[in-house]
Amino acid sequence: MLIFNCPHCGVAAEETELSGGGEAHLKRFGPGCSDADFEGYLFTRENPKGVHFERWRHAFGCGKWFIAARDTVTLEVFGTYPAQTSEPPREIFDRISEKRPGWSWCNLSGEA
Amino acid sequence: MKRYSAFAIVREALMNDHKGWERAWRNAQPKKRYDVVIVGAGGHGLATAYYLGKNFGITNVAVIEKGWLGGGNTGRNTTIIRSNYLQDASAAIYEKARSLYETMSQDLNYNVMFSPRGVMMLAQTEHEVRGYQRTAHANALQGVQTEFISPRRVKDIVPIINLDGPRYPVLGALWQERGGTARHDAVAWGYARACSAMGMDIIQQCEVTGVTRDGARVSGVDTSKGHIACEKLGIVVAGHSGELARMAGFRLPVESAPLQALVSEPIKPVMDCVVMANTVHGYMSQSDKGEMVIGGGTDSYNAFTQRGSFHHIEHTVAALIETFPMVSRLKMLRQWGGIVDMTGDRSPILSRTPVDGIFINCGWGTGGFKAIPGSGWGFAELMATGKSALCAEFGMDRFAKGRFIDESVAAGVAH
Ligand SMILES: Cc1cc2nc3c(=O)[nH]c(=O)nc-3n(C[C@H](O)[C@H](O)[C@H](O)COP(=O)(O)OP(=O)(O)OC[C@H]3O[C@@H](n4cnc5c(N)ncnc54)[C@H](O)[C@@H]3O)c2cc1C
Ligand SMILES: [Zn+2]
Image (cartoon, rainbow over all chains, first blue to last red; front, side, top):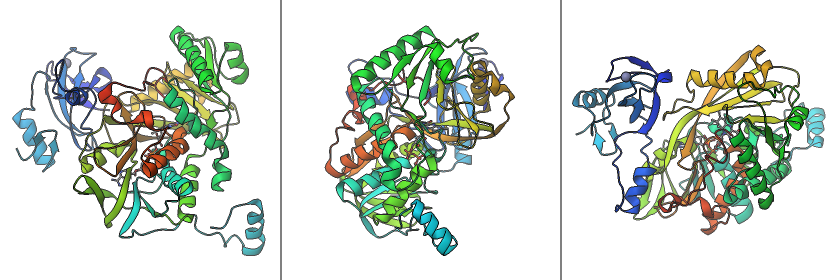
């Protein structure tokens, strides 16, 4: 079972008290955008075998959204941070780079 | 290839002490180039190769597999075969597949143990009653034989069922008498044997690590056994579709998640059809060995672990116990998972791609075993001729156009 530390209330939350919200850091597109951008926002996903950033809601806890960095093969959790951020915090970046040298995800990469 | 037959068994027993059987398929090593390379020796990849040879005479084909053939979802699924979908495009390809299953053993000269034992989808809420009645009407128009049956008939067909709930009483069911199950490994092995007999190479323990291009066109694949050149490339790798698409330079509307199944200890025959309960996320059939084969829902997050979360098993089994109280006394023997490729509308993608010469067949998610022959039939046609009526609606451009084949509401969760 996955366990995440909720960055809002500090609880070590088990998978069953959370609900998954899919890929994080999606760029939102709306009226007036191109079809390709809208399709990308709604449907196209990174779906990596490796480092993944994803949204979770502490549904049966404080009720707030957060983002987790996790490996989809080993299920190792690299860290969590509040959902109101456009990029992972530096320390999570560094932790991933240390453990998965050369990783990349969308426009983010360990080389940055 | 020596044909299998009752006579062959007698011959091998009396004349050869069973030492005369030949290997079912050659253990091939890659050539420098092929007309067509298929990545992924699951059911869909092998069936594609088979129909390329059989229907179009294209036999300079390699099927490349990183593990062993049939070791992906094809060898991990619960083998339910049905074609009672709501949308016309789905009904067409799944019904084509179901009808090909009826003659597959004869066609391949390999016993795939197709067992048209009937598939029953329980209606346990008023919504499901309306939904399945609608599906039965749609199926009538599509020429797919299904009917909506009463709780009494449900009980006649499945005596071990508890109709009364309490939480989810059985209000009726969608019944497809000609649906059923087949032996999953045999489907992969039968196609592999037939492909090998046509001179195709099935290359196992060979991982594709890159896709090479010559301008806008594909030129081959890099593998753990070196570069293999090809004219056309078919990507048929289920949960790994996103990885292969990245290698080829495009992105997909697909996410990968674990789906698990489990089997009980073997017991005497108690249920001779497949029962699915989509409201409570559980389904069950009994294997020829007597094990109850049980499946449930997917994990709610992306992963490649091929095992799945424990609480899903608990959820599935708890739900089934209400409908089948006898399950509570069964010991569960084995549990496993496969990585299913889920699209936004829960329908597959059989499509050209932004790269010339590359075709993709994926997105079968939790329910593609039943589709293997129909998918192979249509996808081979698409790869050989550039178009296929069976595949036409399943292009990957449908997401940009909003032309979904929405089975996520229509088919429920599991397959
Ligand atoms: C638990 C479970 C229960 C299911 N129950 C049912 C059911 O009852 N009925 C039903 O119809 N469907 C069911 N399904 C779905 C069904 O199993 C799949 O849709 C179907 O088997 C997919 O077949 P495939 O050939 O596309 O993929 P697979 O059989 O997964 O084959 C893909 C192959 O590609 C190979 N591959 C991947 N990456 C590479 C690479 N880089 N290089 C070379 N090879 C590679 C893999 O090793 C694999 O062998 C179930 C699935 C699961 C997991
Ligand atoms: Zn919290």
